[in-house]
Length: 375
Image (tube, rainbow, N blue to C red; front, side):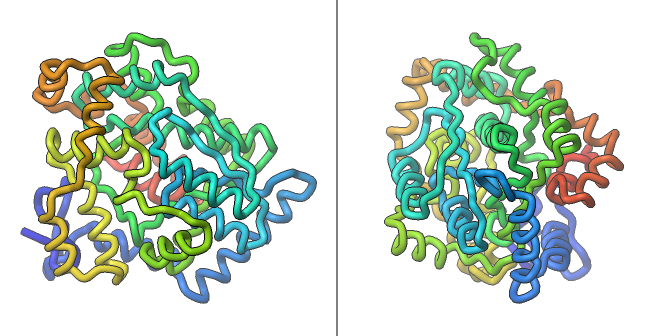
């Protein structure tokens, strides 16, 4: 069965359909639409948020931290912050697998907008070993250390300069709602897998331990804000604008500006786990009116683009022979449930994270994803 509104079908985990054939993920989208209106009302709310940020930034060198990857959304976020009259500090987590285009995009946008950059660079041997450990663990989240590393880098930048706000570039209208059960991430998950499968101790990788996260959010009051929730963000128009104004370059697809993400999303996940992250992206664009359902159904049938040189680089940098790599690809499938994580802690203290959400200390999507129980 397929949703009558988007392109989610019954291969999506935990999907249900109402009497009209509309899936529960579409209903969740509608809840977010109601809570985060765009247009004039959304822009008014965003400007109000920006004014509060400016006041809190008095006597500090920067108002807000923005994570940058060289991608479309993070690049546009820097421009948007400047439009709101803010003094952003860009923050970049370098997992040593950036594409040349990503590096050029970051430099072009930040230099044009006169924005400073805070960077945390992980030891390349350490990160490659963590990446390899996740592959040995046979779980889908092989690139989750990059996401955790970036999140921690945001907080490190805030702590260094006394900044109270972080802008994140996620938009449920263009990136969508990733199905529960496809990907999960937390610091204990990373630590458990590295201890079990890795050869290096975690030293330079910035893991986001729950104790550190609570210090930064509860004690220091650092808030994460997703400005894209309040604006009518059109991905194609944003790409055209960035290209024209800053010489920004398109890298071919969602999260393809980094080579570990490229490999994970375009090779490892589809071939080993039958997970195609275009489903949430295309469904989001359909729900928000940026793509027709017919177009999405047609595009999802097209093979995902993949540069085979990326596969060669992964094998070389992770020191895999062809035979060892094939063994990895054929290991029995596992998930975060097979390893120690914070998931049960998040579920047990659901009330606490609800309070955190209501105080704007965590996004609602975090509360929805991490505190819900899934069998």
